[in-house]
Structure formats: C-alpha cells, structure tokens
Amino acid sequence: MVRKRKLIFELQNLLGNMITLIFGFAFAPMMALVFGSSYSHIPQALNQLYLSFFCTIPLSMVFVGFGSLFSQEMEQGFTLRAELLGYSRVSQAVHKFISLTVFVLLSSVLYSWIFLSHFDLSWPSWSIIIQMAVFQVLNTAVYFMIVFILTIILKKFSRVYGISMISYFGIMIVCNIMGNLNIGKLGDYLPIKLFVTNYTNHLSDTGYISGKIGLYLIILLIILGVVMKVVVGNKNEHKHQY
Image (cartoon, rainbow, N blue to C red):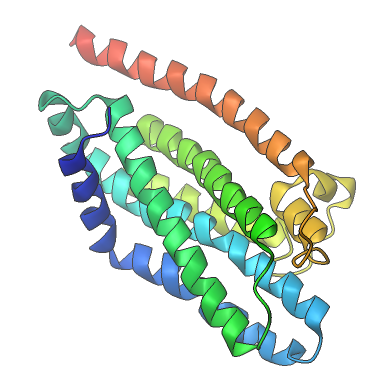
C-alpha cells in the first residue's frame, strides 16, 4: 500500500540530494548540447544523440543519485528505523521506486524540451512518446532492483557507491554513449543500444512498435525480482536471529 506521507518524504529526500539533481537533471541536457553542436545540421545524428542521452537519465538517477542516497541510509541505520515504524523493506522499496520514477519522467520531459527546442526538432509522435516513457519506467525498475540488491548485500556507502559508479560509466562505454567500444553481437542484445538503433529513424512514425526491447527488460525484471525476494528474505531471517 502506498502511503502519501512516505511518498512525499521520498520525493523531498531525492530533491534534497544534490547528486541526484546534477546527474539526474543536468547531465543529459548539458552533455547532449555540447556533443550536438557538432551535428546541428544532421537530423539522423541528432536523433541518435537525443536518444542516447535520453537513456542516461534513469541510469544517472538510479546508479549515481539513488545509489549514494540509499547506501547512506542503510549504513546509518535509517532503513532499520523505518522498519520499526512499520515500513517493511518491500514497502520502502515501493515508495522509493515510485518517487524515482516520477523524477525520471520529469527529467525526461525537461531534457526533451531543452534538446528538441535548441536544435529546432519536432517532438516524436505520441505513439513513440508513450513507448519512450514505458522504456524509461522499465529501465528505472531494472536499475533500481540492481542497486537495491547491491545495497542490501554490501550495506556500506563506499562499497555501493564505488561499484555503482564503475557500473554507470561501464554501461555508458559498452553502449557507446561515451566512447566507441565494439563488443560484437553482444551489442545487439543490450536494451539501450537496441532502443537507440531501433528508434533513431522512427521518431515521427505513428505505427512503429519495437516489442523486443520491452520483452528483454521484462525478462530481466522477473529474474531480478526473484533475486531481490531471496536476498531481502535472507537478510530478514538473519536479522530476526539476533
């Protein structure tokens, strides 16, 4: 059950985290505008650039912003105190995920408005916008589960933040958002690369749907959900033994 007071608290918590604001809201438009100046007269290149940094929003918001925030809460015992007040770890996860998703979607809209307005590009069709929104939500869920599981296991801010930052830049390098790493056929199965490749030439289409990306993400979510249930369950059992 979603509690309004807890949800407002999580939103304010994210809003008060400078790392979340910088990486979640400023990084994508800033980098996209810098790189986009070199391709201002090449619509296809701009579309690809737009989608590439669009994908970094949930990545930045979760791995950098949420990773730092939640690991500090875990290390300082805040999550345990929340449990004593009646908020189970599952309940905490639900409220944190909803607040993160709100921020990701708001940042995506803001980024799109800045980029498309600056380069005088048309907005994608409503059909594509809906698919882009679904992609952001699913990606946020995948990243959220990874960071949540990682934090539950490692607990310490330094460990979690170190691995989160390595993963953050590693994903961007592998997906060719930063750098141009050739990983062969493996790249054909990475959701971010699939998204950018499939939608670059279809932003204005009204009937285009790429179901493969959603299918991959849903399968990944199911796997992570099972892992998350096992990890949270084991941690709760250990906690009750003391």
